[in-house]
Length: 330
Image (tube, rainbow, N blue to C red; front, side, top):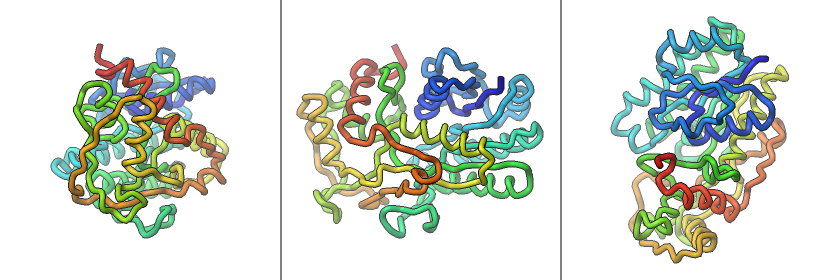
């Protein structure tokens, strides 16, 4: 029986997608270099290969040993700040890695790929909510490399028998309801885990950067999506390609957005901890509101987010962080 290859399947969103694929009865092969992923995050029933997609001999060997039906691609560096001070690292891993991967896919006749992209491809949005047809003018190197990867898929698809789906989204959050896997980044940059470090005794307060934005309470509004809902979208995108559909791009979001203060307040409610907050000046480059429209994904892919209220999202995150204060490290 053929398998789905998940690149970056030991990372945060990748590991949750592997769990959901296996729950759906799929055979799964995982490739990860464990630069930011964790071996413990890989589902025990998945076949694991330790290696780097920039290594053509390695990726060729995986395609030769395994019968791969399609690829889901999470293997990329993804820190916005780091991408601005070390852009060549991002070009090397994100672009060069994808080029090597596509060469190998074309050579082995593997013609379906679902790509984990980002709403950072849009830069400053034309409007809210953001539509797939809006301008893509990234304001950081991370978003630029992801957009370049999308273009690489497009032109490769034009020249070869290849079809792709690119999924653009903002803030992945939460953890698997089973409590076995969750979010573990070092350094941590995402808002919800940073907030939860306060009740976990890892920081004294949470900083709120900017309280004078043109929003309902003056703090930034962001789109938060539960990681299991993202996983389901990647699986639906693979089904869409299996059914012979054309290449496509979809936004994923909850369509509503929550302010930073709302997220902090909900975390206080979930944890029962006062979570002191310190108001600070704005950070450079933070737009006031980022919300993506996922109407197209709902209509075409049949995507239906199950964890779309903030309290549920934070409850699953807190279950993970409370029981794993140091992530996957014992």
